[in-house]
Image 1 (cartoon, rainbow over the protein chains, first blue to last red):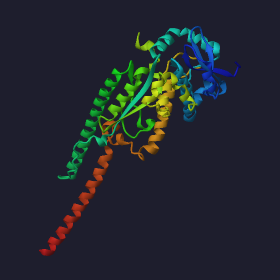
Image 2: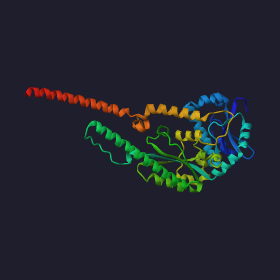
Image 3: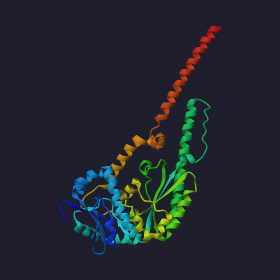
Image 4: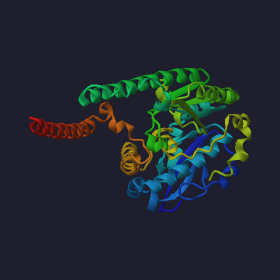
Length: 257
Length: 119
């Protein structure tokens, strides 16, 4: 470890066949390596301080292209690890001065890592997003122009508002319904803030953004349920994403105090 | 980074059945790596709240100005409840009403002139 390097922590596992690592490229294009801790294994990347030191990092994180690249690389490493065994993903930019500091940090938080590893073992995170197309909701829309233009204007305005109100309420009810049904097929579930349409690459408003931790045995059943609810109403489209590393189920200490 | 992953699927063999979508949506990835994942203190201090707000807002502002209207995702802008402003419709309505008044006045004048002729 040279003066100009830092240690980027990707994930923590119980044990790992290191052969998996040689095919990976990390956030700095490096091949990640293993740091053996007392009872856990950390997967770490050696990254240059010139890009990942305190000052450089703050600057770089505000560069969307840089962030895009680094986020994808971090996810790719974590994703590969999660496919070969129980893995706890670390939040982006968990960086230490060297591997010894990584070891100390992982050992210090071992109970938390162990709890999470037990929770996610043999299970996979899936994402489900639902969007609502208000145009397919139906409902009456009168284009009655009788009366004075001012009155017609007010009436149109009122109708548009109540249609939107109905759409929002319908969307909320459907989201609640879908989420409760899918939760029943999962061991753990979380609802997240709906993504902005622009960020999500969607034109339609999102009514549900949730993640489910599903037993690997129940994957097929879960996928079929998503497909079923996706066809239940023409105005609602469901999108399944994954398999994901268990990002949403990595903080067991907060959930079971 | 990800093309070699299918070979590693064997441990979760049944996953392919539900569809193995390569996660590529930046929003999905950012949401997870910035917002989720286990948080333990590193040696390099990063205020992730700042990053999240900065980057996502930046992207949204740029995107919404340039493309939101083009791709028709600005429905909330016309919604006085969501946008907090409803002058757009009123401006248009005012314009309409003014045009209508001008028309009526013109018609009234013409009728008066016609009436004058007949008398």
